[in-house]
Image (cartoon, rainbow over all chains, first blue to last red; front, top):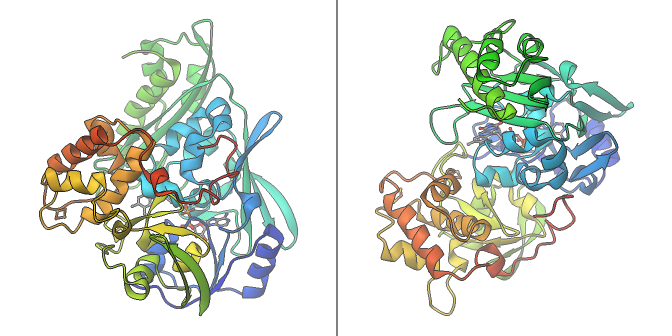
Length: 286
Length: 177
Ligand SMILES: Cc1cc2nc3c(=O)[nH]c(=O)nc-3n(C[C@H](O)[C@H](O)[C@H](O)COP(=O)(O)OP(=O)(O)OC[C@H]3O[C@@H](n4cnc5c(N)ncnc54)[C@H](O)[C@@H]3O)c2cc1C
Ligand code: FES
Ligand code: FES
């Protein structure tokens, strides 16, 4: 199918993009990598009158070192994230999760920022952003503001980014030397997560010193599994300790029932997958 | 209408397009590259796969205006001097198609995969072709063909061999390719 007609603007700087958004009125949409938006436009589930394409804004692409954090430009593609040496060294969880997203063609176009603003509860990159305590930098006509991941995701497909704003970059505190893993449960290739678990662990002398765990698709927004994190800290990195901590995974979640899974099955999955993700992150077999 | 300039299979085209024109429709209807096909409305099937500045993309999920200034390689741009590309030849030799509808996309994605990993095992081929669906073959001979082609192609083959400009990619990411 063919999308409804729209005006197309391709600004070359963030300031121009913000201006274009302000001038275009209500029915405007930002175009990132287009890998979620194009299918929506083709099926005419949305018919914006103006698209503001961020594809020509060089300052939005790439990853840079910023002292105690790395900063990922919102238009950095999934493919680039999986190949980036800063991400590999300081936010390995993001690289590992991104490898599980969609398929190679979509990873060549789809962007880190677009995935976050799209905020599909089954989207895989939300949980690692929450787990690692990312901060999102948003630009609008009244300037720039920074929103922590814990406040960024508001509801299904809804974030703190207003229709006339642009997500420009994501700051991720360095987690250098942490072990990490993303455990995703789906049934066929290209399918979205029924449940996913993002885990990062810092071990010290055979025990778990710090842990970050967040869940995909266990509610309308990604959920930090704080009960699991608390139960892990100070424990020996052993299969037994991890299994017992993982029992807290479904606490405070509100999963839906749909064609893929009932809510209580999702809770079961959250516990099982948390056990697997943390074991893998901590380098514990079984 | 918006004016775009795109190099398709080595030839430069300047055209007026509506912004809502999908790259695949531009290629088929304005440039005449009907070798690239559309198989779905949901970005799932991969039949429309082409290379955009050296990277495989689903051309139904890119607007033609987004390809302005870029180089596109379609299935029609692979043969050289009347000889099939080694991946095309391997699909032929290994009976890697039945109806053939998925084949243009399969071949374009297989070439991308081999550019990344010149010697993939079965599992890696299956993962690399995750975004391409085939309703006929059951994939066995497709996997065989890709591995056969890998064996016959010298290292370094793949999108780089098409000598596409890497402008759009260079200086993009701190980590490089
Ligand atoms: C077949 C298929 C399978 C997929 N499988 C998965 C999967 O397994 N896991 C997964 O996580 N994702 C999956 N995806 C989605 C993919 O990861 C998309 O790349 C991602 O959801 C959107 O990123 P994008 O850059 O393409 O954004 P777009 O499609 O361009 O935009 C998505 C939304 O975000 C807005 N937006 C984009 N960028 C910005 C910005 N910088 N500032 C403000 N607003 C912005 C747009 O206005 C739009 O509302 C899949 C997609 C397809 C088609
Ligand atoms: S036509 Fe199916 S993915 Fe493009
Ligand atoms: S050969 Fe018919 S779809 Fe693949």
